[in-house]
Length: 180
Image (cartoon, rainbow, N blue to C red):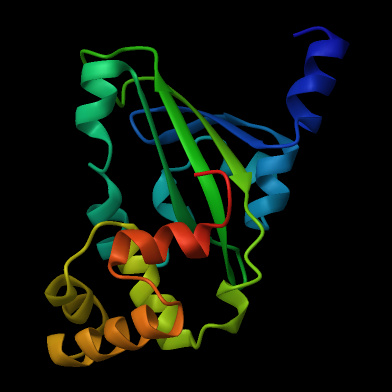
């Protein structure tokens, strides 16, 4: 890369990552700052280092695989973890360069989203919203948090009332903000 291309890559307003088989091969300075890590230490690491647990990593591993295989692109909104603690929401986009083997080589972008409404959520509500955003059922969320499915259903119902929405999809859209 020449100097201008390097500047554009590093200073892009979104985090950029090139991955091969879920190993980080390149990432820009914006992404490193976003996740609270030193870029050089992430190169060559599994994406596992960016997840709170092996279970979360395994759960999210195949999200979007069908879209990548069929269309070459996938996008969603998800919570990310910062090194040292804390979470934040991003609009995630991926484009595979190898649709026949979607994870062989993937270019990804992570655009931070403003979350005024999510800052008013309790930690438990955030956990439930994060599970819903990943497409998990109440039972799956309960299992991952060590709670009963009924507890998750109670939190979910409270969230729907609190945000005056009819279902989980509307809740996620509301919390994601405009532009979905």
